[in-house]
Image 1 (cartoon, helix red, strand yellow):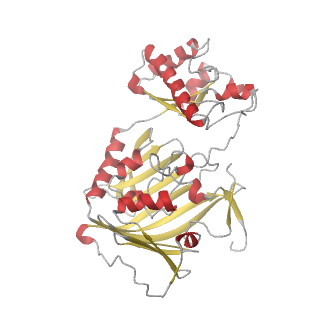
Image 2: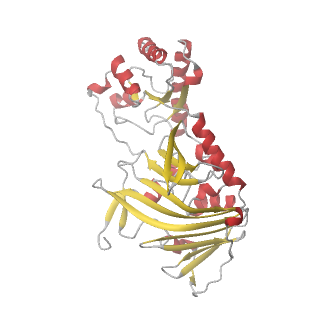
Length: 420
């Protein structure tokens, strides 16, 4: 493999990262945010993929197809609920379709429905995002008027980011001005268990663990390839952390002593140092927002891990028990617009994460990043070493930008390609 160039859909290190909303990063330049960990993932760029033509009969609404899609938890584009350009007022003829949707929800009272508004590409992306949410709220209000509990309805706007037809024609634009329906589950128990894990992690003054990670990328011939690495993490709150990561083509160590971050490429015997005084929380944000160098299991190290993980989640499920490395865990699944993540949390007095899988929803083939945690220790069980850099191998000091290329998840023979 070392002699062959392999083209993947985008640079997986970024096309799979979670979006950091609200701060400087644009994780995916789209929602996600790097959920938790290592080079985690951003959902891919929103590349137009027009799966249906104007003449496609799937676009013809029917009550039966709508109910069947919702029963099987598929998304359903209600093409009869259309809008004029720049407007959030429904066109004539929408009443029977709204009646059908309300009837379906009354027939299945346990259903919860997510309503996503979409626009064509007329106007700015910012104004279209607002307009798409207004359209979703129009549908929500109409269903509430028909007796549906507002608590069962969730409105969201995707703007112009997910077209199903070309925006170069009037017909295509009309198809893109649509409303999408999707059933969702909102498990209070899943959120409770995730919050308990986050609170437990935040309360630990010292943490250490080893991990095995796998980054699955997708080639331009739709082949999934896995890139495996292993490493360790030792954290001493509030401001010290030591991590390692080694794979077939990279061997990296990082040390942070509360003032200076040192990144050492052992395989090239070169290092760089960056002054980032502050807490580990501040370090994590600075690395991924400013330098594009997230630490392994980064979001798990934050004191507000729950807030980072849950932001943007609209579907949550408690899948029951699973076993990871011989330990019984609660298996929890969550969904955002561009990524799914599933996490296994150890049961008992130490609800630590045992496994995490993050899957991109917007890249063809569903590339994913997974990390499995072992040898978990906390409190007095953690052996804290020296977090300062000694340079025992006389490594050469270089600029951080010159070292970046040797720290990534992908070997040199993997070439980033266009999204698909």
